[in-house]
Image 1 (cartoon, rainbow, N blue to C red):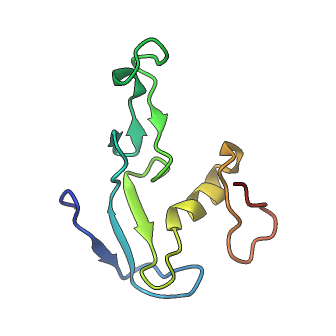
Image 2: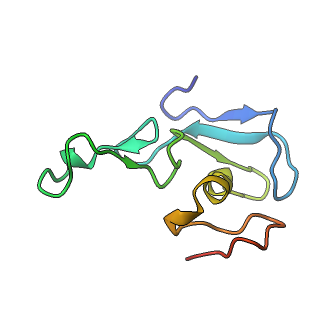
Amino acid sequence: MFDDDQIEDEYDTSCPSCGHSPIRSCRCRALGCDDGWIDRYDEDPMWYDEDDPEMCTECYGTGVERWCPSCGFDLQRTRLTKRAPDLGQAVANPGDEGVAPSG
């Protein structure tokens, strides 16, 4: 699907903030991210277990970064807010006053 830094247009999705289509996506560029998960054991085996990877905080476990080229809205943040608001990094979705931004 992706080459290393290949950016693709996704015509089947529009930006929830401004309505622009297409949005853009690429493979997650976070250091150590492997399909959405980071193995911290390689960095520090004293503090991390070998078979206990952490979810990447850039792509939130998807392995893909998605954003709007028009307004810059981060579509991965929307995914986090809807599916895992308990991580403490959620931001309010446009039009969703039920989720308070954290920072």
